[in-house]
Length: 373
Image 1 (cartoon, rainbow, N blue to C red):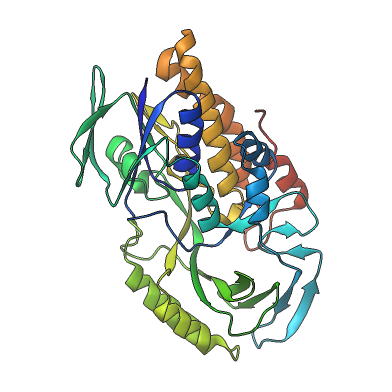
Image 2 (cartoon, rainbow, N blue to C red; image 1 turned 120 degrees about the vertical axis):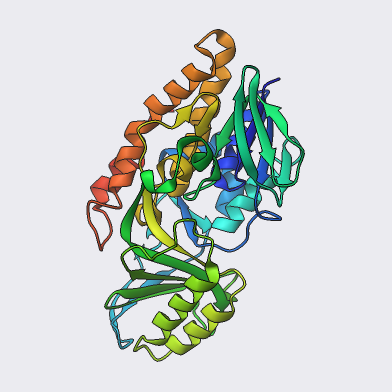
């Protein structure tokens, strides 16, 4: 039974663990956080990714977790409504479509629930070194004893440790998109009832979404900025928190001060650059990258979750063929990349072809189905 170390217990890593376990592999997932991560924005499962979730046997469960939004209002900088819609929401697109929108933490929890009995999870730990040997890859950890695995997968996000250890510094591959995004939770102090509110004020803007039966808000605050000094590893949340609080406090909207106070105290506060990862190859030796670690499209694309799910399915499918004399792991990695590369290219373009606004509907429709399973 082949052993596979997966770094990262997010959507990509957990989905891959699910697919590999079903195919007779022995996955181990290492995750820096002490438990499945909470918080985060609403995410979308679109197009061919819906078929992946169906094949996992989780589609009905995912549908039961979908957000319930009736529409949205768009405000000007002073809080005056300039547009409203009951057909489209900025976070999810058409409200009558087949795509699924649910909270990031809910999808992560669902995937973990359906993998934990057959997958070894190492929470509160991280890979510190990877050394390829004739019989596999030796992985050293911050806490757990070193082990040798047949294969290693980096599914550890935009600031991937595996990518840094095997392929080199992040600055070789990261392309800043001119924006930062912060996401955090708060009480529903506006009393929003399944209704989103969006506001733009110069280089700053936010979206408010009620969740958990309208008891909470998920706040997504974005601001335009060139790369901020020292933000490459994305692990200075308090520095980013101060930037976000100050920018929110400077907005003209009458409730902006309450948003600033929420950002100052939110335990689930997140902020990072919107960036894409672009690489010529996603594998080296017995190590391969998956999802944001190898081809982050950024939340601006609206397709990060779908790329993670589809990538996990394709990689697991190709690895399962290695027992048939199909070139071993190197052949599997090459086939995975050949299948995924056009899909990734089209989806990354969604975040760059129309800066400052949503990608055209025809581009979205083409990108989200540009792969055959």
